[in-house]
Amino acid sequence: MGEFIIKMPDVGEGVAEAELVEWHVKTGDPVREDMVIAAVMTDKATVEIPSPVNGTVIWLAGEVGDRIAVKAPLVRIKTAGDVGEAEPMRISQTLPAETAKVEIAKPTPAAPASAPAPVDKPLAAPSVRLFAREKGVDLRQVQATGPAGRILREDIEQYLTQGTAPAAARNGSARKTATEQIKLTGLRRRIAEKMVLSTSRIPHITYVEEVDMTALEELRATMNGDRRPDHPKLTVLPFLMRALVKAISGQPDVNATFDDDAGIITRHSAVHIGIATQTPAGLTVPVVRHAEARGIWDCAAEMNRLAEAARSGTATRDELLGSTITISSLGALGGIVSTPVINHPEVAIIGVNKIATRPVWDGAQFVPRKMMNLSSSFDHRIIDGWDAATFVQRIRTLLETPALIFIEG
Image (cartoon, rainbow, N blue to C red; front, side, top):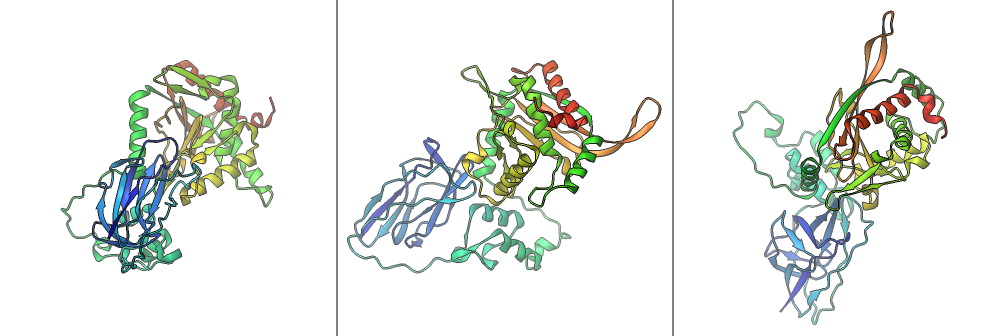
C-alpha cells in the first residue's frame, strides 16, 4: 500500500494561500480518479480540485473557511501502490468566476489499484450548494440533469416548484425556536472583507441630488422604439455611463484609485466602469472597460453581457477586476435614497435610485415630472465636498439635457 499527497495548487494572481470553501469528501471516503474532492477560492474564483488517483482519504488539511498555503499538503490518499505526491500546478488567470477545475498531474502507480465503490454525495458546484442551503433543500432529494449527474440551480428551482420541499418549509404556522450558526466562507467572506476595508479606510462623503429625467425618459423610449433588432433595450445606465465619461473629462480626480499605504493617487485616462451586480452567490462588480471609447448601444450591450456572465458564474477574473469608478443601481427595488460604499481603492461610486413622477414647480404651477435621486459617495481624503457636489451637478446637467451626452468633445 502507498500514500499519495495532493498539494494546494497555485490558483493564480500571485497569492500565497487560498480559502477552502467546500470538502466533497471526508476521512475514510473512497475516491476515484478525476473525482472532485475539494473546492478552494481566491478573490472571486472558485476552483474545484480533482483526485488524480483511486484510493481512500486518510487525512484532510483543515475545515471549510480555513486558508491553506500554496504547495502545502491538502489531502492524503491511501493507494494500492507507491505513487508519492502530486506537484501543485498553476492555474490560468482566466478561470470562470464561479467554478473552474484544476488538473493535477496523474502519477503512474507502481501497481494497479482497484477502483473503490462510488460515493453517493450529490455532485454540485459550490454556488449551487449554497443556493440549496438557503432554500432548505436536501440535494439528495433533487433529480440531477447536469453533465455526469451534476445538480444544477435549475434542478433545485424545479424541485421547489413541484412542491416537494419539506413540509416545514411550506408551513409557516408552527412556532420556531431553532438557531443556526453559519461560518462566513467563500464569496460572502470576500465581500465582508472588502466592505470592512472600504468603510474602515475610506472617510465617505455622500451627496444626494435630484435629477429631472423627463427628457431622457422620452428620448430613451424613442430610441428603444426605433432600435435595430441587434441592439439591446436601453435602460438608464448606458446614458449614465456616457454622462460619467463626459463629467470625468472635467474632473479627472474622480476617475482615480488611491494607494493608502504609499499615499499615491493614480489618475486613469481610461474609464473602466464597474457595475455592481447581484448574483445567486452574492455581490460582484463586472467591469465595462474603456467606456470612453464606447457609444450608447455598445455600453448597453457590454453591460448586459457582463451582467449575464456574472449571474451565470461564467465571468472571468479580468471581467471582475480593474474598475476605476463604480455604479450601484438599486432603483429597480424602489429605493429613493442610498448611501453606497466605495469600491476600494476607487474614490467614487454613483448610486442610482428609482424614477418617480413628482409634482415640480415651474414658476407658475406644479407640473408632473419624472424625477430620480442620484446618491453618490466620494473618498473625502481625495475629493472635497464642493468638488463632489460639482461632479454630481455635471452629471445632472447631462442627464437633464440628454442631447449633450451625444455631442463630441
